[in-house]
Image (cartoon, rainbow, N blue to C red):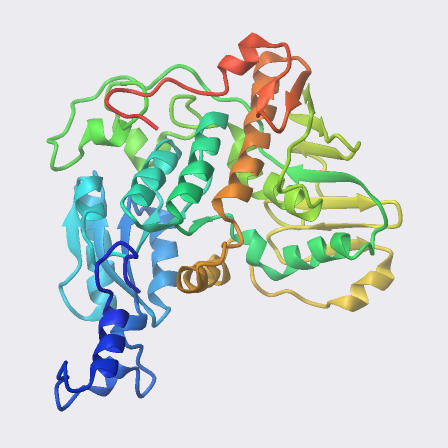
Length: 425
């Protein structure tokens, strides 16, 4: 699969050559693999993939990508030497070669015209900036969640991917997993009656505003600390951050509502068919927020009182019934007669394989992915608005069309964060 900005694509060249006949002479013998014979995928049908910031979750995603025969992973960019070398070893072992290229500068990997799509799995602070930069470079993007740190980043992300016509898939894979699809289908087909309340399993919202003590900063080739910080405020180096210990610090993290709400609020928006809007009121509670849509539907974001059906659970309650499900693939349902419509779901909610396949298919068809930039931006806006209400400790009114709070200047200032020079969105 080639970059749409390339003058002549690989597929286009082969097609033109076949039509030209006597004008363009193709080699007399072409390996079957080049034509997609014997189960091989022709080069013209392959999606060439690069990666930025692939740690634990990112390498799990990468394995799923490489298990698809129409994907070829060719390059990794990471500001940490150990991580980029680990990913190179993973890819080279998979393909039986030493071809995976190494980069420490995002702009260098994005400048490669042969790369069609990027897998981005950095820390949260980089997701929007890296995705937008990739889209401007003509790349399609699969980016781990959450896709943004603020309301303004959410809007910039959606607008950029629409402007540049690139495919975006947030790593909110539960939109592509059986038990969550089944629960949403029950709502969409009216089996639960009129929807009254949707519940999203979130974590405690709090973050810390202090930072870790300074430690000796490694050489730039080992850890590019300024590159690691990116658009975030400058903070002294501490190795714990680079080992994943950045979570829970306000500078680098959007809080517990966003951490799981990027999945579960997103599922509630989808089930309630609210992908194009957001609640108009947010009421903070001790460990969560209750929001209300314009039509009276309640969205409850809470970290307690779940039935033990797995992490990232959701619950949909209608006038005639309810369903609760989570990452175990199991579900509880009322009335029990609805259970006969489905039996057992075996794929765990953390498995991204079907979601990645959806992204790859959309790269080829150019149809919007299940978790495209528009729907992901909206569900993230809900999480950010809820966290702002929780931080301020007061009820907030919200205009979903303008994505701004009503008559609350302090809340509106919190829709964005200052970015460290020279970064701009």
